[in-house]
Image (cartoon, rainbow, N blue to C red; front, side, top):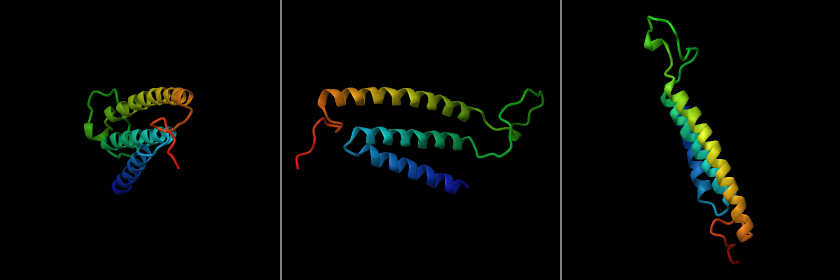
Amino acid sequence: MELTIALGIGVLFGSGVWLVLRPRSFQVLTGLLLMSYAVNLFIFVMGGLWVDKPPLTLAEDVDPAAYTDPLPQALVLTAIVIGFATTALYLVLMIGSRGVTGTDHVDGQEPDQ
């Protein structure tokens, strides 16, 4: 299970890096999204892969081994919200750049052919 998750995270992050290096701004934005998803998945998995364990309890005598750590879940939730906000910002900048330069190429110029 851990090997499958690690390979999935690696493929997701590698695809994101490949897209960030592309010449179009939409591809760069998609690459940033894929990398943020890979990092979120990595943080979530570092909390431990548990099945059928509750995250919190109000009982007095708590066995920490019987419960999942809620911190990675909170970090991922926060990262998702921040990622959504930065994606919206990047999208507005991308649309503004397209309006000013007339192209969606990252350096503002189409390559000569």
